[in-house]
Image 1: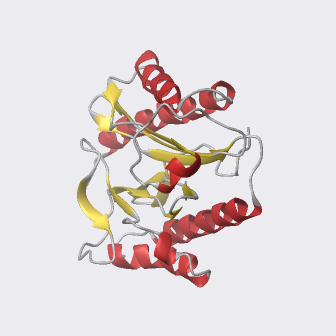
Image 2 (image 1 turned 60 degrees about the vertical axis):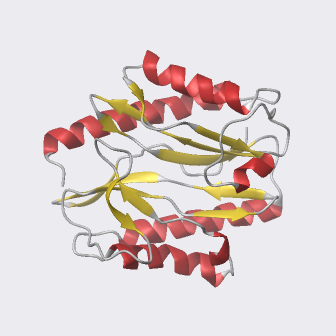
Length: 227
């Protein structure tokens, strides 16, 4: 449970992360490698007031995006690639965590439908998030949206986790969780679809359950961006 001073620090970490994503929209281009993009992210964080990354930056393009915990490689960005970018920084000890999936040049109809479905699932998870709600029920709200289109089988991790001084702390919004969300919690909401050897889509925001209700600390657009 976070106090208002802690929330301010997490908000600052999220602001740096938002700014980094907006920077990437002008930086990413065909021919760059996943590793080069990841380095740009890490450098941006340090150059803009963060003290460190919150976790190892994930940049996964093309088929690599089908692996939820991919490690950046020397694969070059190609036209038609989806790119999943999962990043976060530390500001005065507190972490941010955000994922966006973008496309390069063009996108197939299958990818577009998957993106729209993941976004719909994420919005359902966010809507379900409130104090007193069971973590497992919040997970279920997002899962049910995916499963309506027979895509639940491709969602291979929890919906979210507590974030603060550690990038994973406290509760876990998974189907087996016995935890309940409380006022003062900060959690990620991050559904994903990962189709083996094809592509993956993940969209993640950081949410704060305030005394006034839920607040989204991740401000950048979730509209599909095609560079």
